[in-house]
Image (cartoon, rainbow, N blue to C red; front, side, top):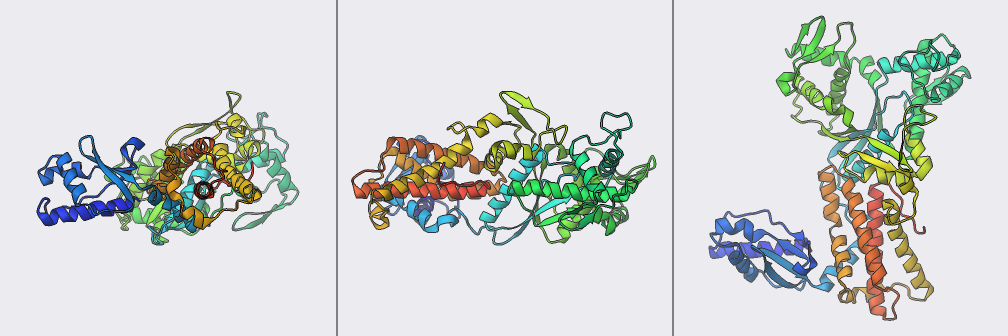
Amino acid sequence: MKETITLLLNTALEALKAEGALPVGTQPDIRVDAARDRAHGDYASNLAMMLAKPAGMKPRDLAERLIAAMPTSDAISSVEIAGPGFINFFVNTSAAGEVLFDILDAGDEFGRNRDGAGQKVQVEFVSANPTGPLHVGHGRGAAVGDSLCRLLEANGFEVTREFYYNDAGAQIDNLALSVAARIKGIEPNDPAWPADGYRGEYIQDVARAYMQGDTVTADDRQVTAAANPDDMDAIRAFAVAWLRHEQDLDLKAFGVGFDVFFLESDLYESGKVEATVKRLIEGGHTYESDGALWLRTTDFGDDKDRVMRKREGGYTYFLPDVAYHLDKWQRGFTTVINEQGADHHSTVTRVRAGLQALDTGIPKGWPDYVLHQMVMVTRSGQEVKLSKRAGSYVTLRDLIDEVGRDATRYFLVSRAATSQMTFDIDLARSQSSDNPVYYAQYAHARVCSVEAKAAENGWAFDENLARASLHLLEDARERDLINRLGSWPETVRRAADQREPQQIALYLQELASEFHTCYNAVKVMVEDANLRNARLALGMAVRQVMRNGLDLLGVSAPREM
């Protein structure tokens, strides 16, 4: 309908240019928005106010000229001018209802588009260190990242999901020392426990599996434990593989998969880190001071220069990050989105600066970042801080076990990533309208129930009768639902463009609310077959869009609840 109205306005615009009322070169971006108040019509445009100055007319006078120049359309019942010059459109009921069959005909494809034209996009998300179970913050990253991938795919992009493992450095040494200590019977409260050791019970599980000679399979390798308590290299390799496998099980339980698993250690083994350092030095962007090697990141917008190689040897963490992102660029990803925790905020500027210093044609501001804030988990109004298994944080598996995959995914993606969020376990478990995922899923199940009852009464849905009866959907609540359904494709585009999958969750809440309100007020199972079938079509369209939206969030659409 927005396209229809835009076409009408554009035709009027061309007519006024031909009359000389507007400059020939006038070509504004015509905006048509859903009206906030149904009393002011279904859609509104501010075109007259945008063009009043170049036209040398008052906005209301120009609005009158535009309306007069518009061709008639069966889709529009009336057009009015409001306020300083808004043009309000009232849509013919039958024409508005045609979107219902656009939805039913397109099915799962409704709302999807080919705007991306197959452009390659890489999304890196989760990227947890292989030192322990995934925590709830990783879960938020997984929910946001995977939903963003689904959104981009729905907009026609070719998406690669990537997980980056920091499997090198001090944290991995501490992991190996922790496992070795457990093998030797040292407990976390023992004075001999490593100063920066990991204390969760999972360390005992790793130690036991290692000494049993177990074999574990990670994405790219299979590791058999040497069962030698003194072989630190073997302990390190086994522990990393064991935890990578455990994290993979957590992600599978969460319904999240990856196309590529990339290891930091590969950057060192392949010589890519050293090659990056060499290129930065040859480019004249480095200097030595106090025994350390520095990169002049201030030349590229950073607030201070950064150490690349420490005085005591070894590279700081941002240097392999630069090498890693150079590798992404060389793999042909001109669009890269990193979904990470807000604690990575400080790395954004320095990684981008390092990439600019390489002088390889990488554009400024590359890659893109989506940073999520922390999650606080509560039960009975009190913060839940500890997991028995992890020892110091709430794990993703804890939440899945408590409230299920659907509720966990929906809750973690339902707020803007930039907002801190509270995950209320009691609310997520409740079967009430206060629980947003239950409320949305119940809308889908409710339509399934209505359709089943109609069939039981011998009132199977008659598509032809429904198509001919759309003009009967005259209740304001029905019109609100129709307009909401019509805005779904635009919502999918906007959420992907703005990298905000929470817009999908918000849309589903609004759709569910309007559906439940309409269903409670407007009877579907009526004797009048024309009205009944028109309302069944409305409900079935709601169900389809609800299913499409839930799928973009990785959440199921149950037929019964």
